[in-house]
Image 1 (tube, rainbow, N blue to C red):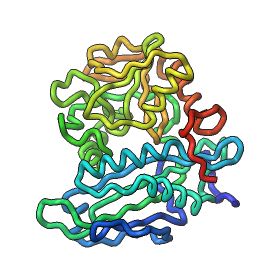
Image 2: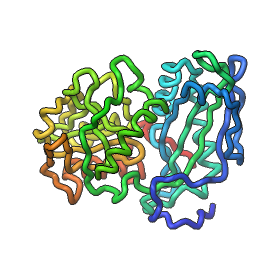
Image 3: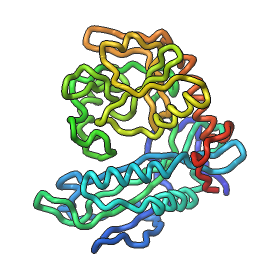
Image 4: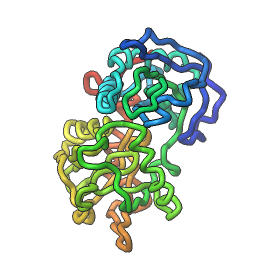
Length: 340
């Protein structure tokens, strides 16, 4: 299929309307069959549950053109499972996981001309989401829901691509103990908007949130898990209040099985940030964005890897995982879902 006439290498991380999207509705205790539609407008009641009480969850994944010309997705079954977990936490009906994966395939195939070509540096971002759609005025779960998926071609999440970024220790809390920090709910991101706008005004790319109970432990940033390198160790944060990143879980496997690193998932104290040699933010949108500096008030923590390029170990992790995603490196069984 002929590709869209787009300067793929100049794409930022923004929305571009594509041809088709997927829609399924939950009513009377069951999901309908779902379908593709060209209509990008969502029409709901002014009293819809999502508008009154923010009952919504979402996911993010990507489709890639591999070196041999195939179109694939990376571990969509894990996105399906995580979205089901998120839905259950907000008293929403889980969208069937097998249907989630099939819907992803349908939408990508229906928008094949929008899938960026191999080597362009761009990908097709896939956004599944679900929300309470019927009128709700009392504080309670909705009775009806809509599940949708749209896609949009994107470039790098952070301007400058893989150039190291500077982040700050947040002045705000991200998630409460026993709260909703471990699910991908819109409400978690809404509360971070003021903090990220402030950070950007101050010249920082992101906020690094400490735990809200003691503010002594590292948790995650507003949109990504954080990873650290120390010698031969790949270190990630273990906490029940952070989102279980699919990219981070994949990097843990790559670190151990492909690169021979020792993997530690544990509590990371703010006081030990200066002990690490490299740091990075990991997630679907950016894969890994290297961190060159963390600012904590008037204190600067500068990593030896510097501000010019990725540190050597994070570079290997990035190259290996993107190599797997793009088909240049053999993937573990079940990681690559072939769409075409």
